[in-house]
Amino acid sequence: MRRMLHYILKYKLLLVIGTLCMLIVIGIDQISPLLQMALVDKVIGEGEVGLFPTLILTMCILTIFKSTLGFCKEFIYDHMGTKVHRDLKYEVFQHMETFEFTYYDDMNTGELMSRINEDLENIWQTINFGLRLFIENIFYFLFSTIIIFILDWRLATLSLLMMVPIYFITMNVEKHFGRIYGELSDQKAVINTTAQEDIAGIRLVKAFAREPFEISRFLKLNQKYCDTNMELAHVTARHFPAIDFCTNVASITMIIGGGVLILNDSLSMGTLVAFSNYIYNLIWPMRQLGWLSNMLSRNKASAQKIFDILDREPKIQSPTEPYIPESIKGDIEFKHVSFKYKDEVVLKDINLHIPAGSKVAIMGTTGSGKSSLISLIGRYYDIYEGELLIDGVDVRAYDLSTLRQQMSMVFQDTFLFSNTIADNIRFSHPNASPGEIEGVCQTACIAPFIEQLEKQYDTEIGERGLGLSGGQKQRLSIARGLLRKAPIFVLDDATSALDMETEHDLITALNHLDFPCTRLMIGHRISAVKDADLIVYLENGEIKEQGTHESLLKKQGQYYQIFLEQYKDFYTLQKGGISLEKTS
Image 1 (cartoon, helix red, strand yellow):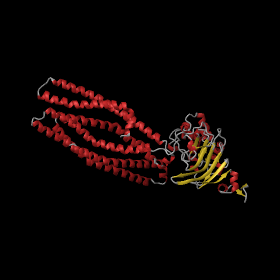
Image 2 (image 1 turned 180 degrees about the vertical axis):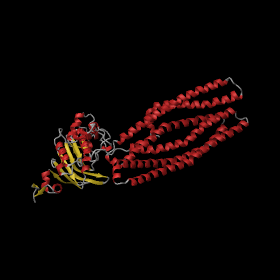
Image 3 (image 1 turned 60 degrees about the horizontal axis):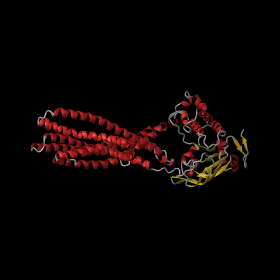
Image 4 (image 1 turned 120 degrees about the vertical axis):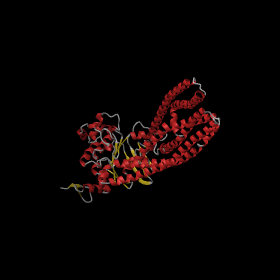
């Protein structure tokens, strides 16, 4: 709760007004038993009937006043709690947006959704209800304790002694609740992750008829969550009845002790009536102590996970005094660059110069480091050794936002939002006009498909582009990348789902863009890369070959072997040379 005060105190005025209303309500509750005492002792006991209308009218006025201020108190605290919840959720989401790719590589979507939803909801409930009740109960207990000692110190001492066990029971409960709620939060995240993955991959599940296995896996996780909840129920069942028993014993003890004092003429009946009301003001906080302990334990477990996120610093950040150029030409140079991912060397001593405005193709076997190489350009990952220069300046000196705004990435894993086609393309350039969107769609060879749709560019597409073919999703992603018109344009195997004819048309269009850019393209087909100014072949994280299409064929290395494999049905090659003759 101490760290939560930072967020709560942003709304000090609401807190002060809400607490002031609360104190007035508590004060009225402290006056009411005294009025009842006067009613019993003076009106009924001594026959002062003239006081009756005054006492009843005063009670009615105080009740109305209490109800009005009670409404204000509830509304203000709820209003403050909602604002704190909004701020905290925004801060968590904003902070998560600063994390590097490595963080998301290691985290499950379901777990992160649990943090930003369930855990933040637990904190919101604690602020909305728990904070108010905590402050309320403290004042009720303090004021009522003072007054009952003034009324009769003997009866007050006896009643309070009976409540001591409740404190120790509650402290014991909190120890159990803290551990259990931590486990429940973790298990809920695992369940959310499993459900999210299964729903997202439902086509794969059905394709392999794996429904029984997935149901069984979910059942086991759900059963574990159920068992932990049952453990929580056992703790509650063991301790909460004991708390109720102690509070009831305190009430009975007060009645018995008060009755004895009345019989001995040491206490008036009105005082006992008032005393019973004040004891209720003590018993009620004691009863809620267990419930508050429950809520605070849940909040503690959730807050710990939330603050773990907020306390984590992004591993890739802009320097203190970043380099912010007005524009970038797109000259890229790797100098003895090595890269590690989770202690595994992925790239080794890469030396590569890519002049501004050139077209570079990157080829290689699976796992050779192609995607890692281009991810280093935008500092999505940081290099391990060496230097990576853009326009002669180390990428680590750039302001991250500026650097990435000068790049346009089309990733291998195509992602589309549940939105219209136009809004998905406009994601890279929010202010783009409809004409600009149509233009990049023509270049990406997707315009004919869109124009056949009933709503054309306003067509809603499903989550992650469901309902579209792989090639259609890739072309939409390419259109989105083209719309930015960035000086560095990167395609990470972005044409793998296209047929050769469509790929040829697309590559031809990309070779005649109406804006200057350095283009890097990962490809596997000779047809897609042969027109590049430079072709780089990677193997086991090292550059094995680089050159133009013709020069690499002359070397008769790995690129040459790929060429033979892909074109063996179309060409015969003369031994000892590269002269090509079409087969008849």
